[in-house]
Image (cartoon, rainbow, N blue to C red):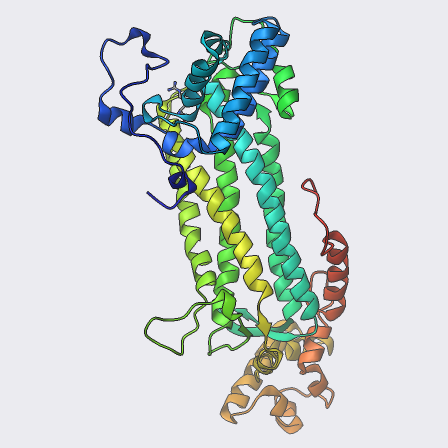
Length: 483
Ligand code: ARG
């Protein structure tokens, strides 16, 4: 099994046997292999707090509507609170033969408070119960992840503030293209992560719908009050179709898709950190605390955190594929296949949270080598586009300007120099429009400084974006989840 927290919680081997809550129509005991094979308790125990909160709300509603008596409801709720404590303290006797967290808790409740515990499952099915638990879980994970992303954004913005005047080569095809501010480059990632936060919030709106009250698939004959439960549990609405509510997991797919996109953004940033920290680039040093050594090559200092973040992307995208494939072709309504939703869902959420947190800390540890970045940005041809724009400003159509500059580059390669070093005489052979002011236009400062179009890399633009973001993301104090 992949590393997951479920391992920490020991699950008892099948005890002599606990009578199955559904055992009435069976004449034979379940095969031991089947018990192992069908059990979800090794991982769905993690839903216990949601399961209990959902059951407490359900019991309160059963009491409120008179489906059970107030006394019975109070007894059930007290028993559930006790069980919550037991599990929290590691004293709960988990049993594989009770399949899942729902039946483990219900069985325990009946053990503790007697047959009245059997009234909890009135007007409810495990199908709407598990749909509820997962929605509550995803809801919390979304809020947590949005906060962690905010922390990463803060780190990015703080680094961009420190490096707002640092010039680096911008790349296309990993070839030096045009000079940009390092702050501008960093803020590209801010934009990505902010869209990711938006995607999570979008997803939240569809997650936060109460499925409980759908019964097994068709609703219930009992006079339940779904709004009452929704209010207690903080849901914004009720599912409109019982079949849909118990049988879709599109909200989980959406969440894991958003997680995958986050990982893909992180892996792109991680790849840059790997490149930049190599001797070939030498743009940054990642602090010792966030790198690791080699067991054979004593000189090595490896960017393992960045590499693993890149690598774990495969795992999260894999979880997305698993979820999609589990749902494909399932007839309505609930099918046991759907139990397989949990491991990929939990693993994706755990992986993304851990990655976002460690990447933010690692990024914060980076030392930037401004001189090396600057040196690379002074590559002899990096302002070739600026030379073309210079000619455009003198009235030459851009296509012709492009041609002239291409020939200038060719000439400079012949003479083994950069565009800055070509003499005015050489330039005038290429175009009579070129004057002595060309050298100013070819400087890195001019190149960056002139890119004032909205969203461009000009220092004035970057400064004003940073000022906006500093206001949006105060460095101290908890940020609001709903931002
Ligand atoms: N452990 C099951 C799951 O995760 C709970 C629902 C089971 N429902 C059923 N009818 N077998 O999906």
